[in-house]
Image (spheres, helix red, strand yellow):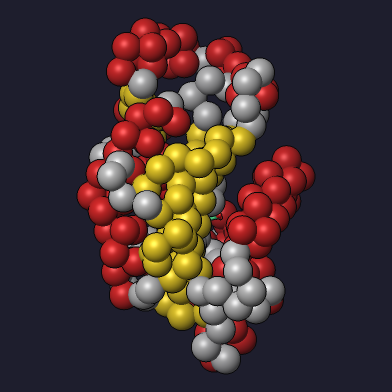
Amino acid sequence: MHTGEQYHTFILNSKQDRLVREKFQKMALDLLAKGADVLDFGAGTGIDAKTYAANGHPTFVYEPSEAMREYLECHCRDEISRKTITTIGSPLACKVQAVTANFAVLNHIADHRLLFEEFSRVVHRDGFVLISMLNPYYLGDARYGWWRSNLINLMRHGRYAIASESRIHRFTPRVVAQSAMPYFRLERVTPRGFGLATHLYMFLLFRRT
Ligand SMILES: C[S@@+](CC[C@H](N)C(=O)[O-])C[C@H]1O[C@@H](n2cnc3c(N)ncnc32)[C@H](O)[C@@H]1O
């Protein structure tokens, strides 16, 4: 099976991932103004893009993986032909009210400073960036040696990377917020408090300053 198709099938068959995706999409749709444009950054196979387009939002998709992109072009072929979804080769090729990045896209990126500077050129004033990232405080990961051995890094530096996971990086919200300044301010972290211990993903909402 094609890699893009494998990811697509796997993530849609996971009930837990579907519930997390529904919450993320609802948050994005509640925040978007009627008919506002959105960029889905690291769009994968276009699952969120299809929903945004179905809700009347012209949607740009940026996806660097060829395998993902090919499947996106198949999954969203009607929207692409109607131009309600537009694939772009650089995130800078659009102007939007919002950028979304769902399911750990920013965990693939070691340094977010240049990324937020780029987002600042794409997002209108008062627009937003909504991201879903792996939550470094999730206690469900405490069964893994890498989680326990990186606790000290988390406390000292607010970040670490795991070589065995293709260098997937974990960040505290504060570290991401520092990278987003001065272009964006962190407005909301979901979940809050003890909820951070029980959720694999955290949603961070940044407002364009
Ligand atoms: C777990 S998938 C999530 C895909 C999609 N957002 C979703 O909700 O299903 C992570 C995605 O991040 C993309 N990605 C990895 N590095 C990236 C980068 N530097 N810039 C943008 N996207 C990236 C991958 O190609 C992959 O499609």
